[in-house]
Image (cartoon, helix red, strand yellow):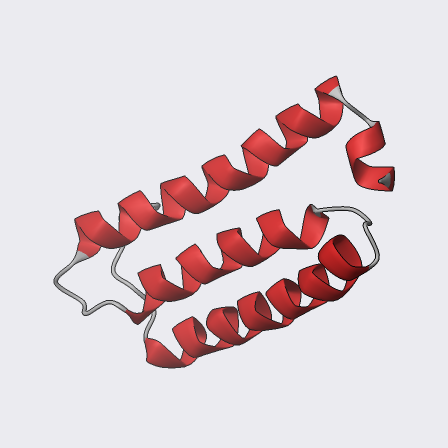
Length: 90
């Protein structure tokens, strides 16, 4: 399921747009207001998913690796959150 054929540029553009929105939101909340860095991790994960879906259909392995890295990014964030719950509030 992870190493399936990419879904196409339309879905990749959608994920990339969501990534851009999350990264802009992170700049506003995380950098300017010194708040949570949740949107940074979410933006990175969505960006990697967007790139994975935008690849050509013969690059299944590359798309799968990018998807695994995107999920690993969210797992790392959850690990940080479990060890330091104040990360979400700062």
